[in-house]
Length: 128
Image (cartoon, rainbow, N blue to C red):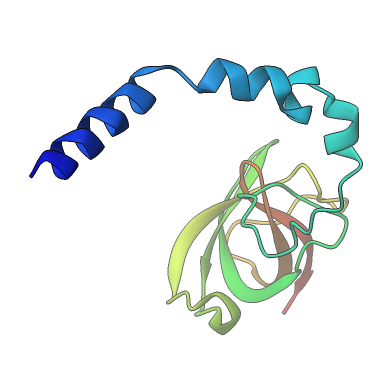
């Protein structure tokens, strides 16, 4: 019993002193050498980075009917898009990446689009 009490007292004495400052002062990280950290190889390829567009953005295809057209967006009532597990629905696509001319409401088109930071952006559209 006495050994147990001695061990507890010794443990309490050791843990009651702060070891963090001593560690920080002697740790190589205390120099805050962020440049050394920046040069460390890090593989982020499996991380989900949200909806940021990249030059290698996946281009999806769909077929739909133009429901509305504005200077900044087009709304399609489109058929299912299996690549995204989307059912048929009506949705808006941004036009920031679109280089074609305006589409007519009621027109059936085949279209391509990408995912972007703001949602989904139309890339191309052609009459069906």
